[in-house]
Image (tube, rainbow, N blue to C red; front, side):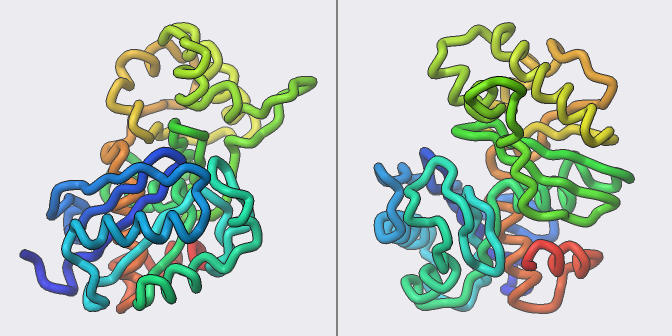
Amino acid sequence: MATKTQHAVGVDIGGTGIKGALVDLETGGLLTDRIKVPTPVGAEPDDVLAAVKVVLERLEVTGSDIPLGVAFPAIVRRGRTMSAANVSDTWIGFEAEQFFEKGLGREIHFANDADVAGVAELRYGAAKDVDGLVILTTLGTGIGTALLYDGVLIPNSELGHLQRAEKKKDFEGVAAYSAMERDELTWEQWAARLQLYYAHLEFLFSPDLFVVGGGVSKHADKFLPLLDLATPIVPAVHRNNAGIIGAAALSYSSDTAPLPEAETLVARATD
């Protein structure tokens, strides 16, 4: 087992599942099996906290001697959740970081789930050593996004909620993986919706690279080749584990000295 200075715990709270693991901060690999429990129906704070406790108990890391990072599907400003995508509206304006710290009896680092996935890919994955603008998207219950410019995270981008001209639903409502399942789309039909979304992002931001994460990225060969973009688009290296890995990396950086070359990234991510 790695020493304290080499590992941390990451917990990723999603719209349908809560998962966690112990992470090797040198490599970004998981040191334990990934533990996953369902996100409670309604996703109220007390119920989500109870589910996180179950994950930590199964990982046998309930003590406070190991840094802990928690990723959450909302805009996060200084520990407060400012939105509520696919969770209870109770989270809007909620002091989430303080709530979890009190409930768990330990300090934590709390951040947006797509942002921490971006950190994982920046440090250990597809965005490592890429110059310019990288846009990571997580395709799952919703669409999360992370903006990475020359190795620096610009937090809380929320580009899944870009509105479509003269349409009632935003892009997340029609192009998330949950929309594919809900509408029983083929890969080709879903790719047509993704084409509109990524082409719009491409027009607005002129990125140097798209990275696609979320659980569906393991099937990237079924839909990414169907997209016609000028920007390279690749699957995330860490796929559905990116949230766990990034949360762990940021928790260690906040709990102790920053990880190498992470000072600016951590400062931006925690503002």
